[in-house]
Figure 1: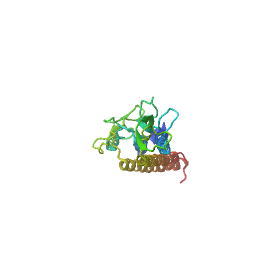
Figure 2: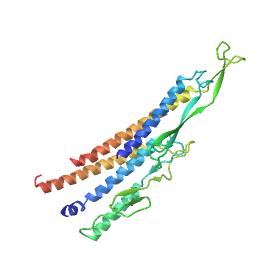
Figure 3: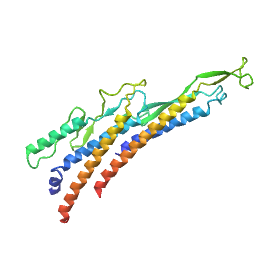
Length: 145
Length: 132
């Protein structure tokens, strides 16, 4: 298919991976915030460094393989991808985190909120970039700018 | 993405129930008789992870139980109709400052969940804008 070749090249699949990751991470962070007062709950997160390392590796591997190769994400410690390239994330409890309160909860509201804001910004920037890419494609297809 | 809004909503519901419980405790700070007999017993909520008791994924939060705490204080007031033979009245052991602090905490947690929903909405919005 001509469209598959068009959509699986360049920055598009990379941006799509970033968006699926930010969405999954946002869910985990929202879960943390809803459990701020739950006895015994431990804050969880998805490892951003692991994700970006995997993404970097995948991009390098694709570039080395030459034209026509698709982006292949390899499973790491916490992040896995199914056969269709969708993210199957397993949230991990935060190590080295805050002091433990008396109710055995290690809440850290400021960190959670700033992580959420950062994540949302990343998501919005990625969406905006993706929109620009789609706009270019559309302009190329329709033949007018 | 819609799931993260459900998670935050479960937080909102749980915090509102906690707020209701605090309000009930404050309203009954001097109640000496209840339908089940004896003074009012202080209620406190127990949070648990998961949308409900059957949720195996443990996403979101719910109120597992509203505990009754049979803690009482005694005041000397012989003219009170519910005073015992020594002239002491048994009252619920409710500390209004604890309750107020609890309400403040519930309010802040509610606001945190609202913020999370706002962020979810913004993210969803930017995702949906890809369509146009």
